Image 1: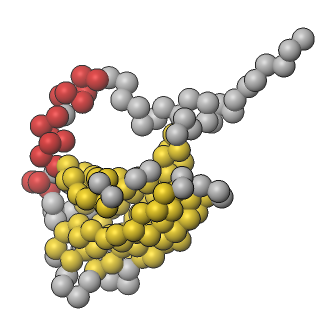
Image 2: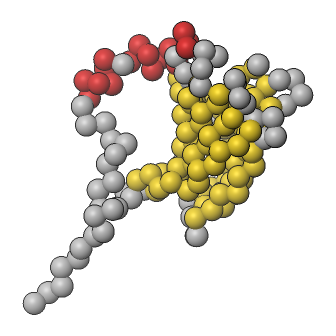
Length: 157
């Protein structure tokens, strides 16, 4: 009898980030167009930031989703306490998103997070409040054989 390949149920069909109802995208298209910023990350590639809705910025904790190459960064900033929560997800082809790191810190002190996944990812992601009162995301990592390095001002306080 031939062996049958089986896959771990945890990775076989990691479809949590898959849009299963295309109408939801269409219904939310105006919101997405208004709140997504496209920026250059070098070598002709683009990064993407999903900003908090315009009417809610600075009104409470602000949530951002940032995409740089195969990394997705979920960021929450609460300016009333200067607390920051940062989650880094690596999108691996076929497998899907793998959470690499979760950290909570203080914006005034800044965060520098070493990230790694054996044979696939290595580098640093950081967030700081600079001398101009800009909140700056920085990155320097290699993922899936490609290097990414840069920084981006997310907002000004």
